[in-house]
Amino acid sequence: CRNARARKLWKEDIARLAKRERVELKALAVAIREHHDLAERLDLINSIDGIGLKTAIIILVRMPEIGQITREQAAALSGLAPYDHDSGNHVGARHIAGGRERLRRALFNAALPASFRWNPQLIAFYGKLTGAGKEHKRALIACARKLLIFANTVVARGTPWRKEAPEVASRPAT
Image (cartoon, rainbow, N blue to C red; front, side, top):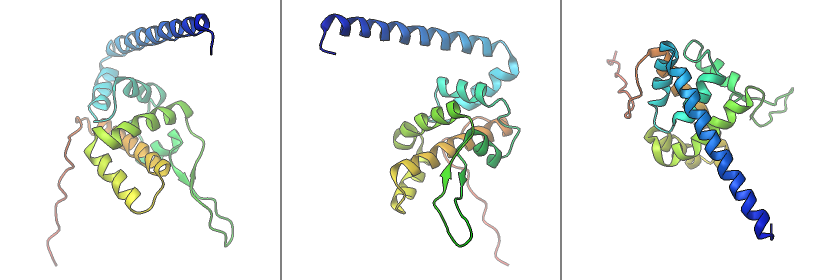
């Protein structure tokens, strides 16, 4: 907008709405903390590198069954599960569809900084995917799915997130 007065009004409105959003987020966090079980799940989800308080609240509110379902079910409910587009001999591209749009959008928005800066496991995963030829957006969707799987696992186990990946016990040679 070239009109300085209108531009000023819009900036004031945006600032007012941003402040209102912050206040409402804090009020929602306080309401969640009044319930012991919800507060515990919120803290577990928030312990994951790359998931902030806002994303943790969205996961908890938009997916109340978190921690009680399988990783495949969590991905399908969020709309981050890859579905095939095959028919007969035709093999089509995999795509995501359906699910809970607001949850999917929040996870995708959290995956971008998490896979570039905050979560070492996602950084390595993103690098592996792009190194194998995956496009940026497909790799980010895979990272968003991985974030949800991390959240589901952390809540199911009841233990906070650990920065380093657990060591896999090697099987003895037979």
